[in-house]
Length: 196
Image (cartoon, rainbow, N blue to C red; front, side, top):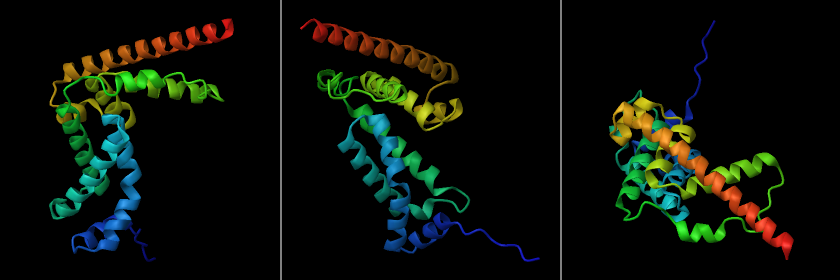
């Protein structure tokens, strides 16, 4: 019986990219761009900056694709580039908080009423995450959204195991504080509107 070989489009596209095939580059871009944008956005918390980081990461990856080993996955390699570039962007900032004042003015807009409880919780988590200092938002994003374990976090953030563990615990605690504060603000706003 003849064994069927599963076609791996990403592997074929990578091989074609090594030959400067623009069509293959476009296929890889279409296949990974959304995921890489989301990865960058969760770290830098800015749409335009996340878009720039994603674009630069693809350009870098296509220029250096010959360095990707045959057995390494393109997606994991590209994600590492995006994460590193996102972390570099965060490090360059002078302040720990991103868009704190701008976001504070946007929170609890009356028009953003949640239809379902799950949507409300996700919105609270996203709003709480955006209020976190970079170091906390970054580690939670990498751990929970990108699925990185402690070993990977140690490598990419250049931290010791106990530091990773402590930072995650502190970040979770801070996130809960932010969510509770958002809920209190929402309740105060509802009470205010009910009284007028």
